[in-house]
Length: 640
Image (cartoon, rainbow, N blue to C red; front, top):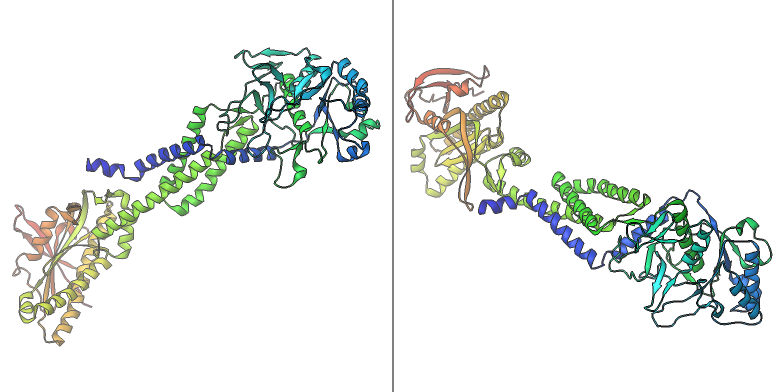
């Protein structure tokens, strides 16, 4: 169980868990609607940045009534005779359909009879009504058109913040189903092409117009969450930008300054753009407090008509959305990518370097998909990418701090800073769960011990003896570290050191280097002991001599002990041989009084040294605990 928990705490399994947790958290935020404002803002930006290539809608002309026009007629609402003049001027151009985006439920004489006759006798004309209202109030159509198919509602769908992003085809108040102004006008235009409303081929409940089948908007489509999906809605594509329509003022129409080509065989929509009337709405193209970027309602209806005509005649599909399971999979993918990147680079600095390209890739995919007609929510995926990468790299940083602390606890004061850094860089090759894995390595082991230590111990008080011994150990351990060795243990006045651990040294060149460094270290220890003896002699203290044994070969290296007290060591026959060489037969090779050390080498070490050192054969010795003789050599230690 403990082993399983250690494996689960590794960065890999934790990264998987983080990716899943981030996916669930971002999914929850998305379902709560907290990310919807950001996603819709991103959607607006994509619409604004979409290339238009100068496209203009050739089938629709907008006649707008401006503040200057209202000032010209001197009365608002305008009298019926003025409205009749406007409609007659439009009809003279022989359009296919005329839509009036002005409520006209009440007569405003003079000219009421004339206007009523126009309403009644012009079949390609559509007037508006207000069909639904939160307060319950509605605006009926002109009385002359009541009960006819020349009525379309002007109601618009407003997102939070009052932004129009969707169009309407039908509304149902429980008693009747009403058509929108855009749909009524589009049907009049398409009738000349032999196109009428049909049930969808795959789903009869869907509306089909020519080559276009419109699936109704659902409350969770794209970046929406529980949006008001009443009626039959669709996403407006706003092709061509904010105002891709040929447009003229009321004065230009009445004065005959509108070209006949701008009216003939077209859809003509008449509405108000005057600021004083306030029939102006926010759209994805609105920019903050700049009121000039807002859009009159008549242009929004024009966009809806344009989209219906393009779909029916040219097969242009509205912006499509992906099923919810795909959006969930998409979110999970980017959460996993973020965690994977962090696991790969394992550094907050490198994450900051690779994250922008990852976000750019996400953005590129979303932009390309959007312009290809697919709305893939980008904000949740971007947040998941950021959150998973940040959390994983934060965990890895903490995990590595713990591993480094564990590693340094194991090797505390045993290795040089350079070796410590090498251990850390190569940690993945030998460190697992805070414990160094036992492995077979080829190392060179050095044992050293003091001769004549007893007289020193007898002459010094315990506190003085401890200080004297610590001075010796600090000097010798420092030399071991300086030569790339690892101090394995202290045994009273004895030192055990390993060369070639814990990072595996597998090539012949590396193993030969370890052997040479161990022998060079023994020479340095001899020279240092000579210097220390001179200092002790000056203090009236006895001098000491050192014996050392060095052997090269395979050992098992790893940690022994409990989790609270752990020690890195090497075990095996090579260790035993080095220890026996240090203590064997003082009479065989006695210590030269001029040289305060005796260094004995096993043949396995000498074979790795080449001609770099002066060694003298001693012979095949039968060491304690070994059944076969060992060929032993004596190192001639140069003191200069």
